[in-house]
Image (cartoon, rainbow, N blue to C red; front, side, top):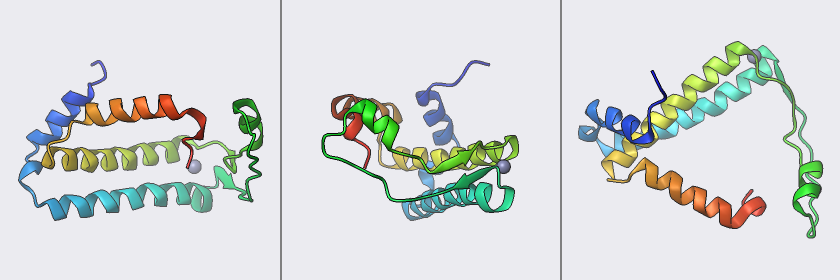
Amino acid sequence: MSAPTLNQFQMQVSELLLRHRSLLDVMSKFGQSGASVNRAVTKAVTDCGCIELNARKQEYSDELNLEGAKETLQSHISGAVCEHCRDVLKSELGRNLFYMTALCNQLDIKLDDVIAEEYKKCSTLGLFNLT
Ligand SMILES: [Zn+2]
């Protein structure tokens, strides 16, 4: 099976009748599933330990160019997500995407348009669209 398009995914979510659920319910699920994504990342650090977080202040400068920024800015992650944590993270991200899509359905917004417009914005703003 080839990868589904965003449209196909959006139609599938719509067929699961979420359109008829309360908007408040979907909003709440969307928020909860976003929190679960962060929780899964946290557990990768504190329960599994496959990644470590070593956060410190970022050293920005005003004349930072693309190459300089790539060298200077840090994700503060060391290690790599293991297979188990990757599966959990993908599953939580999928649930979050599901409810984001359900919200789009209820508000008559096309996921395709959301991505296309964000893509355009990112192309225009480039590197400094980081915040
Ligand atoms: Zn892990």
